[in-house]
Amino acid sequence: MSLSRREFMQMLAVASASGISLGTAQAETGTQKVATTVKSNMASADMYEVPKFGNVHILHMTDCHAQLRPVYFREPSVNLGVASMKGNVPHLVGEKFLKHFGVKANTPEAHAFTYLDFSEAAQKYGKVGGFAHLSTLVKKMKASRPGAILLDGGDTWQGTGLALWTNAQVMIDASKKLGVDVMTAHWECTYGADRMVQGIKELESSGMDFVAQNIFDKEMDERVFKPYTMREMNGVKVAIIGQAFPYSPIANPAWMIPNWSYGIRDDDMQKVVDDVRSKGAQAVIVLSHNGMDVDLKMASKVRGIDAIMGGHTHDAVPYPTTVKNSGGQTLVCNAGSNSKFLGVLDLDVKGGKVAGFQYKLLPVFSNFLEADKDMQDFLDKAHAQTIKFQGKEFVANDKLNKVLAKNDTLLFRRGNFSGTWDQLICDGLIETQNCEISFSPGVRWGTSLVPGQDITYEDMMTECALTYPNVTVNEFTGERIKEILEDVCDNIFNPDPFYQQGGDMVRVGGLKYAIAPGGESGKRISQMTLNGKPLDAKKSYKVAGWASVAKPGEIAGDTGKMIWDVLEEYLSAKKHITKVELNSPKLIGMEGNPGIASAYPKW
Image (cartoon, rainbow, N blue to C red; front, side, top):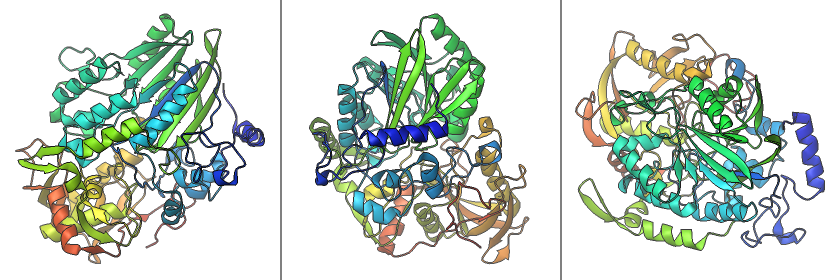
């Protein structure tokens, strides 16, 4: 079932000679046959030709964050691993990533998986994702794989203006049309427990299963949702166990899900695995929203899982990591974000156990794949609908297509510490709220814009469309500011993955600081300065922020303003974004870490 890295590289060489490589061949050369769903003038001809293998077929998407239309999305140039995670998948970026996985530079695959030469490559290869193009690929894979099922790892209902304005309904309808078979969750809970349950019931009425073994009712101490579903595929019993994001009540507002408790619950996971095995499951798949580091640790502790199809950390990993445990071994896969990738896992199950596997993580290039007409018609109608939101009525497309500012720079979010999109938000908060310092949450969702693209209302909403958008202004002492940074830092860089509870580092405007990710808890942040002067621990500073997890009416410093209104005002006043000065913290002790680009700014 497992391959060493050397064996994997040898396999790629053999596959390349057989015409099924990860490499590229332009279709216009006529050297290889192109599938009818692939655009013949653009595609890597063999990219979407994945020969069927085995008898169990799992398709996997995750963290699409409601991106229904094609987007640009830059992978991180900073994805640091610390302690035992240093230098290991998924904490590799750029050239180190390409070398590890044997991906050729200057190819569509290299562009899909790394940040390298992003703007130039984006212009060459075009946008990624979009449900119409993803639907084409899903249908193509299902047609060649009898019984194949599509798994959705969650973070599906949230991330765009249209999803927010329709109270997630557009994503529920899109998931049904896409043919999702099994789903778990994270950001879905930010619509509130009642809406989440209601949406799940609607999906299940159409034939989908929602699974989450780790969400319990606090009072009854019973599971809120079923922990698994059993499917039979080509004569093989396959169990799909759900693992929702374990820290939802911490990372997101607990008041939205007041009666539910979460947690990793690896002991409970072991019991569920044993249960499905006792009921005849010959293959056990965990559909997880743990994050890849947590999945890797869980795979080492829980016996009997054949594969973990993971999400949450948005890591696009071309090939699974094989983890050994007391019962054998487990494949750990992670399938990126933003409807940009589709994972295809084929298992060969013989004699009641997995004898071999094949895996591909396929980039969804919208210029390479034809749009599925049925899905495109649905999307066109969805974006043309009349919306009623916060007392206003408008046509979705009219609002989304409104140009707020011209743009001459690369705008992106994803990365451990900062992104140019977040810098715009932080700068906007300081200017519009008349503050000295600003904080913006280190969420991973949010798309990218290349130089020359206008900033539309839709683009802005992909960076701020959540259900707790209130802008705040507070007075914090220097000591309190350090405590905030230390707490967030520990959530990200705790040496034990089971204690990593957050997203990326909180984004900061105005304040400069140094950070030692591999340092001791509570002592990672130093050298804090404001306007060139050291931050005074006892002095109070005016700080703007947004996305408080406190209950409305209890939000400290609530201005009553919504983040999208503040950003619209700021961008419209600017009219033209020519340059964004990125406020990147100074890194301490990270020299030689392969999870950081060599071009990381130096102080």
